[in-house]
Length: 288
Image 1 (cartoon, helix red, strand yellow):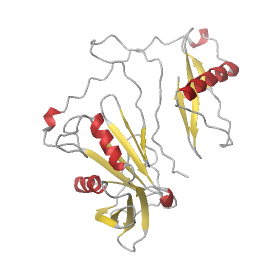
Image 2 (cartoon, one colour):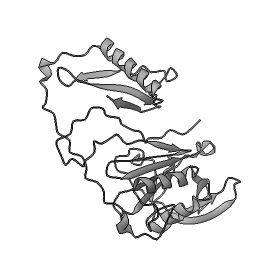
Image 3 (cartoon, one colour):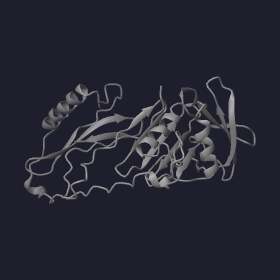
């Protein structure tokens, strides 16, 4: 059983753009890529975020490693370590141990625990969660050990209790995907395939698309969409997704019936909220 990941794509169809320079491309939704126990996605401004979680052996302990980097040539890499749902006193000394596939230690480092938050992330703001932003030296250490290590184990220095176990399987491929998306390969700023090209050779971040707000419809003049119609549209979307190997279906094992919601935008268009994945306490939807 794999640990749940809060990193999901929100797919929006039919965005209307204002007239802009002809060189600007129509934006596409970010694609979430999965590498073993890691997921990564990059936006139109080449900002990338990734999340690594516990492997099967570490589910009982918990833990996660979040990273983000903006697309600007000189943007730093940020990492935050989450030590599961066990609150730790501030400034607790933590020993980070990187292990290879045989369980042999590759390297180790020490950090001080503290409570930090991730932008827009509720897991890191949980009152019982301990999230620690890693310093630049530890970030570089983690990037380097991910070349050979497959697991990051986190212990309290005082007493030795294990407070997190994060899989590094897929971390190197994730870092490479970020380098590729941000055009950093072969430059001094690359995480994996570092070269000698200066940061100024990285293309500038593209201008963000301009979205034109549609006139607000008169809700009173729009007929509501009945549940049978919404269900019929949802079935059509799911059939198309299965044909394209992009399936979004909660399935029968959840035990809760999540309704499909459709809201009219105007006389010819509607917004469809399609339940996609569900966990013990959350629901992710796609917008069509």
